[in-house]
Image (cartoon, protein in one colour):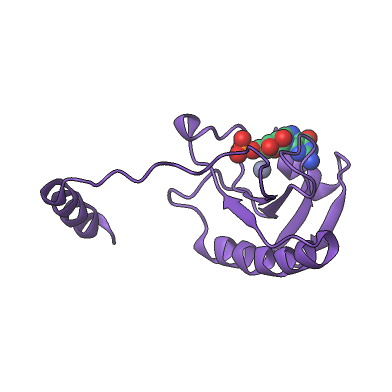
Length: 136
Ligand code: 5GP
Ligand code: ZN
């Protein structure tokens, strides 16, 4: 399969690996948004959160917790965004499920401080019911 992250998992493409277990690897992002920006990646290929391998996602989340603790100690950070993109309009560029761990510092200008705008409670309720009934 022509997947960059599968090639990193197999070692065909080199990476700066910070962590590995049976199900997951973590390596440095080569286009870091901040010092320590890294990716936590299930070894098994699946594209995204939609119908993805829930066991592998769980393992990735467990690994992310371990790696985050290491980041905190190594870099002395107290803030981090966990970002996970699914699909083109969410800016996913590599279609192999992954978690971004992005260390944050005061005044780094990276954003995420989206404004709070009160929603329409009727619309929220309707959407809630529609989603709830679609979860299997
Ligand atoms: P996405 O946009 O899919 O959420 O994130 C993909 C990430 O993979 C990007 O932040 C990008 O910098 C990173 N990336 C793409 N190609 C490579 C690569 O060959 N090696 C590593 N280490 N990171 C990569
Ligand atoms: Zn892959």
